[in-house]
Image (cartoon, rainbow, N blue to C red; front, top):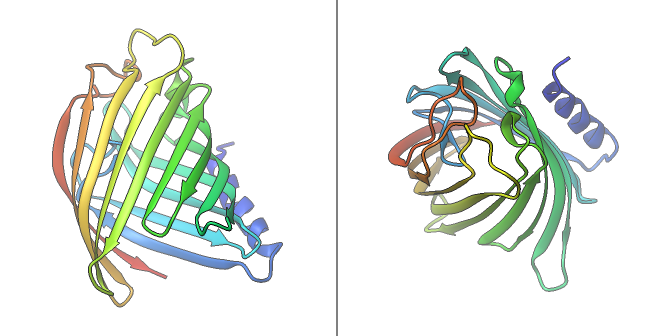
Length: 230
């Protein structure tokens, strides 16, 4: 039984346990899909779905799914289920802690889990994620990221992020143990629609996560997306 649908059930439980829970979601189309700098759509446009539940008590949960295109596996779905707890601090910022489950429907051997902690403010947030067995390997990893945003007007804003993956244990032969990725772009909202244009870049050592997957190489490119909230 695939585990990622359980995240949706968990999200519904979180929502049902708090009458003040708020649900939100979106449907998107992206010109190319990169997650943490790694391409998952082979340069082709793919649809995506996002669903989240937030409660006033601080608990939250959700699920994300994207069409997946990887060499040797054909088309499938890459899904992320997550749940956590966030709390405001007297200083005005916030902290959070939670867990995620990453699933590949056509390459289940790459499935992995992470736990994370993070700090945030109105414009900047940071998170550190730990995986005991990253993408089908025995390698323990830590992924650190910083995200920021700046509103230029009510409907237009700038955003940026930078992330760094580091191996905490021996690196398997067919695995790249370190990489640095980043993204910078602009977004514009029109009613329930959002348009984004971003420059996505990755700097990594030559390597692959598994013999059947594509190599991880340094590269950069423009990614366009359109989404509608519901």
